[in-house]
Length: 234
Image: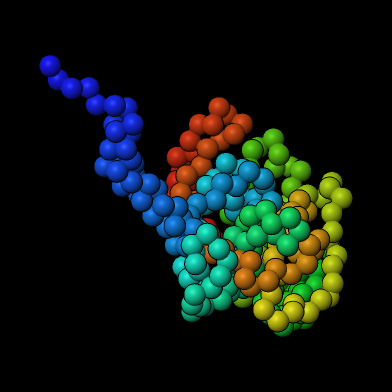
């Protein structure tokens, strides 16, 4: 008759032979996401029309530096964010992870006058925005917005404003402090950004957002927006 193995022994054997490798794999996965690469779900429209609700963006955490996994401690640094890049960072207001565009670098003079952006006294240039980008916004909403392509440091990117909203359209001028960055959303009249919580310290920046890896339409049963999968961010 086969001897029955007590459950305590079976549980110990499971932990030793099965659970330990699984735990190691999970720790490696989370360490990878913490220090090397991750994705960020975008639940709000503060970066419209560049990033829309339901987009999930790829975050390159090695774009600027290497951090100790699960911390903000820097092991090494080889680059800094450039003006016009989209970055993910922890908000100075409440530590929420946000996605915004870098508008001002350390030492820059930033001013906004009726939604006209000035960097170091130079006005940003604005050109008509391609209809392909505008059409990412539902047709019923488009008449309430104004769209443009903003040229910032030879880095053109979409922006939009909503005249009917009460918003901070005039701001500054301010000088961006050392080791800090001025962030703004591309949805200029509906973005909680550096106009409200101030500049963002360098050590709060998680990484650079470069690609929409997938997109789900929250207004249509979370159906995939296939045309947005694996598209580069301007």
